[in-house]
Length: 320
Image 1 (cartoon, rainbow, N blue to C red):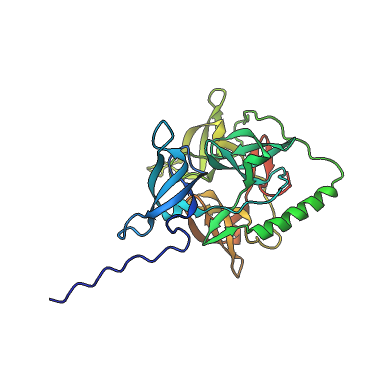
Image 2 (image 1 turned 135 degrees about the horizontal axis):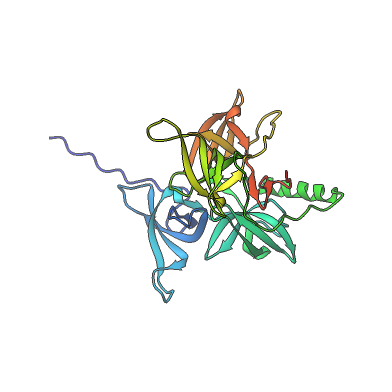
């Protein structure tokens, strides 16, 4: 009998070696979109080279706060510690990470309050909270071993934004306070979901009738019933409904790092252009699933957020 080949030890990971300071994400409900500081302890095992044992910096396994929480996580839940900007001037509609409840949460600046304080809107919870400049950082994605957008490019964009600000004739109108949206029968809308596997997606629908103060019966545009005899109807609360976004004509093409919605499985899923291909095709990166997929130009639209009754394009000082 021939001897069994020796097991080959896993190669050392270029980013997540033992002792490396990292940030850790979670798939648990209520924690998506947040990142927590920690340290890589070691790889979980030779049989699971894509899993790591990590130790959190600010989360603890005891009430006294003396025993740091340890956990085994997948590689896609890890990223290096993000670069920190210098003395940055944050601005309206810019995507940021806000430090809240011991973690960094992704949001969008909706109002400049003065004295280096800002209102930040969080898509996942539909909340708007106030933060000081010291608790904010520019939002970046870790994609294929690179920060997107890179630090150098952001510094150039910031300088350009300051120049545009000086050329403005009048100040931007401040966004109104958050109120419940009212929709009439027959209004075309888009609907989101908090169910696992559907976060970050919006589905076309129509208002059928109101159901109380903050709920509506809606009919989906493309989703059908299980027997496929009719379009699916559901009762949805106002926090998961928004108007149909206005069409944005893209004369030429999308650019790398543009945030877009991609038409996939009957819904619009938010992602970032990670590569521009030939023949008007693009590779789009989806943060929630850590996937990259290819799309045609006609399957994409520029991403917008519906905040306080206004359409906002993140990371751009533009309001529609």
